[in-house]
Length: 256
Image 1 (tube, rainbow, N blue to C red):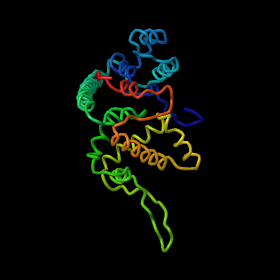
Image 2: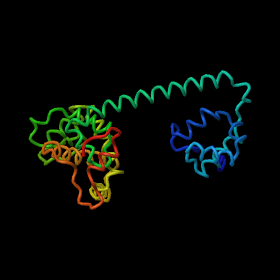
Image 3: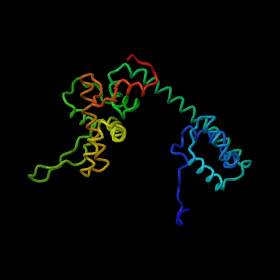
Image 4: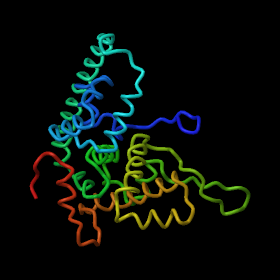
């Protein structure tokens, strides 16, 4: 309670992270956490490389101390179900990992690998975008690809005026549009090469949605040129190496 209001606070930033899952599996009840205490949690974190921060330990102990859960001995059925759910989660996670490895095995033998040279674009996003783009041999400009994604602005006109750009058309390939929109959000945060472009638009007062669409269309133009010319992402920065950018996103070895 803060100022008479209920406030919700996250203990772990990632609920499905390594530390959270370990505690759910082995110490699922508040009494388990209190028994460990601050010293025990630190030791546990070190032994299993959980990287639990001091602030997280304090939040965890506070939440455990404030818990109104029933006693551990009264929760056998609930704990059984929790263990089954965690087993299911582990099974699904392993399946996803297997699919991603197979996706990677196929993807690294295509020109789509070039998309991984772009900072902020991961394997799954790159593979999805490349597949949804389809054959680009019949395209003569990036604008055709933007129209295919449906991220091109629609010109609205009233009377004899020149008209103005309204919202995006949302025509074409919805899967491609969803994939590149997700990529646009990621690029806005993780691509330092495109940050100046993003910043300029933001300073002009563009809203978040418009900024992401602008990043999407910028990326589609870059991707089109890269795939057409079979060249990696270019950035005039001495610390940038496109090969290293690719290697850090893959688990399978590829030729340099």
